Length: 73
Length: 172
Image (cartoon, rainbow over all chains, first blue to last red; front, side):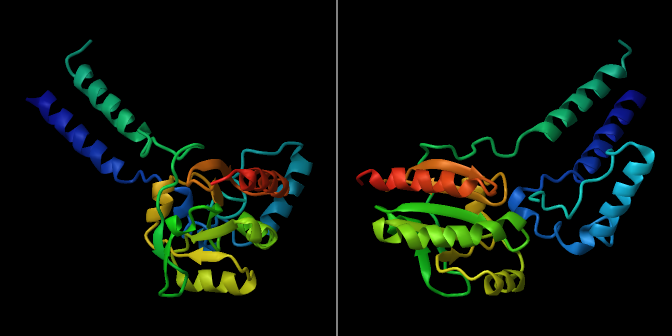
């Protein structure tokens, strides 16, 4: 009985989590490309600071990609 | 295997299968018949049908104001349309903006003469299964998709013009 209950609970939790997964098509990225959807307030300033960071640390990468989420740049 | 492990593994397997399942498996490929486009011109009540252009070589371009390479492609497509229009070439831009004001601002900034049509609910983009922005489909005089362009950069112009000239030579 306990096994059944936990399996059902797991299935429900899984289904609830699935609703968070959305496959956004390339042509539906208008909202994602809005300025407010960016991680940084100023893309150029972030790029500059990343360059300085890379020069001082002698390492780069592992950071987010630049720009909004339209995936076209 | 303990009794609890099997059902949990089964559920995880199902969840993984659902998560990785590709939504639409039939992307439009060269030599497929071009799906019909029935819509209206941007910000106008005039109806538009792709089949009305049968007999012409048509470049169907999916664009949006938020798509940076579209800004690069627009003047080039406009020039190609003007250059080869008399030989039977036409460009149709299918808009993918959600907000009409963004679209209109873009159209004011980047003025073009080719046909621009609406696709409010992305129905046309779904029918063509557009994978990238911009995406272009070069359709021959018989209504068959012959070349698919995903994205647009400096090298796209020459490639596209060569393909247009090749298709223009074919008889309907």
